[in-house]
Amino acid sequence: MYIKRTGENDLKAALNSGKVVLVLGARQVGKTTLVREVLKNENVKFLNFDIEIDKARFLAAASLSPAEGLRTLGNPAILVLDEAQRLPETARIVKGWHDAQIPARILLLGSSSLDLLNQSVESLTGRNWKIVLPPLTFSEALSSQDWAGTGLNPSTLREHFTAALKAFLLQRMAFGSYPEVVLSPDPKRLLRELSSDYLWKDVLQAGLVKTPDLIRRLLTLLAHQTGNEVSIHELATQLSMARPTVERYLALLEQTFVIFRLPAFSTNPRKEISKSQKVYFWDTGIRNALLNTFAPDELRPDIGSLWENWVVAEMAKTNLLAGSPCELFFWRSRSQAEVDLVVKSEYGLKAFEIKWTPRRVKSSAFHVAYRVEVSLISPANPFFAEYIGKAESDD
Image (cartoon, rainbow, N blue to C red; front, side, top):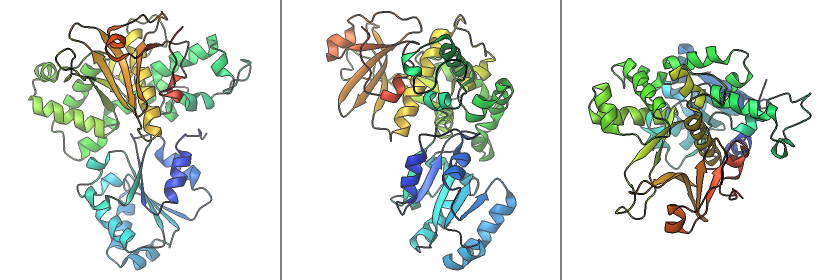
């Protein structure tokens, strides 16, 4: 079953841009499925660089002139190179073909960011249109469900926060939103497979990590610290690693779309924390798999931190799909006043408290400092992420 993705229109626009199109995102997030759906009526040649014979065919074509090389591949209108990060010279070859103005559009699909995708990625600077595909947003996941018998459909769910909808929300918090996981009758098995080195396979295959077990141990520590400020020094001490090594591993996990960092917001370092950071998982199912805690139950002891990760990730996914027009932060004063999420855009600041148990948000130190009302995000309004920058204060 294909789940309609928000990124479809961006991909169609990118294909008409005359640039090399890069579709990036974690493994199993649906990149290939999205591309196949959008291009289902086109003359397309797919090469998967996880398959040795496909790599050999591409390299053989690259040894010829661009026009002759394209001819050996069947003269497709669109050439798709899947798992492009598996061939280090991909960007250099594609740059040559693009500059030679071959009569084919080229798409590169990768499960790593540009820095990891290719050591010579600067060769594509100014020539590419990048689309980053995260796990499903909540709205995308909702559209995949059969709501027959509930009296609801995706177009009316926003007005009816029912027991069925709350149960689905708890499932997404527990199992996450990878497309196959959302559709699977056995999501735990899939999540255990994904969290057993598969998502960070590119880091391991590239030889960038000498001790693979350290990656899992680092991620497990981060999973335990969800919602709290992360100390690189403490992580290094607990893992018996050098601080620069921990920093490098965190960067690699960001580049492979497993985690993302939220920096501290500050305009007054004397009164506010300015150098701290929080770390969140793009998908809460992966976080729970690392901890082996899958209960879709609002009474679970970590419900507050799990809800916070889910909310921040939804905001981050929505922002990413919109082209990252906003910057996301948390805020804490030196007197320990705190705001869970600050969204900065060209229109100003929005501030949010993220609480599983709904309550009124009172005037806060952040409001005093910035004259910005702090809004409440609770389970009763799980559609906030679609309206990043538009959320209203809780009344």
